[in-house]
Image 1 (cartoon, rainbow, N blue to C red):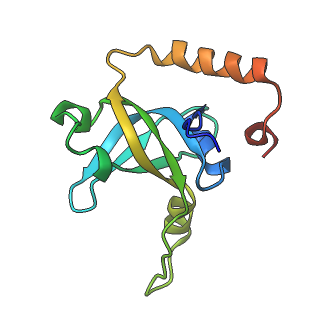
Image 2 (spheres, rainbow, N blue to C red; image 1 turned 120 degrees about the vertical axis):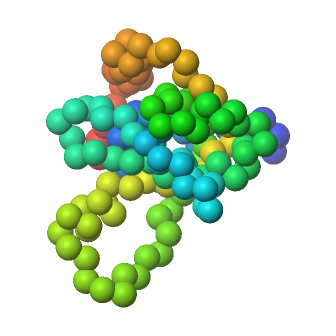
Image 3 (cartoon, rainbow, N blue to C red; image 1 turned 90 degrees about the vertical axis):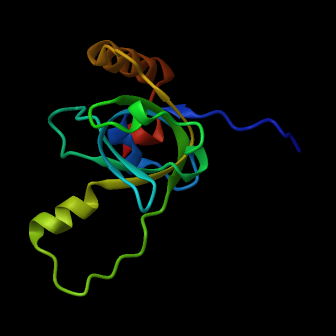
Length: 145
């Protein structure tokens, strides 16, 4: 049995909703919020702009000691390497509105194992590069979903 870690898949944040729990991924996102009690970064990347917005709830407990405060600031662009997780079991005590249900469907969960600043990333160039890489790789489970 090999001890070599599995390679990660470079994906768009919006692709995360089509990826099975346990898969290792790498993606880019912009910090929208940091929730201190749960050590969770809420990241967004509105690509493609025509789709419903997706938020990645990234647990950073395992990388807290290495993360810089500037990487947790609203508006910071980050590269995330981590594992897709199953959504937590949530049993509302009251009936959710249509808007609240849509919001819950737009959340994906990731356990970060590495996180670093994307710096002054050119988001449009990143989007084109990832699209070209997906085209070169051919149809995948993400694109079929």
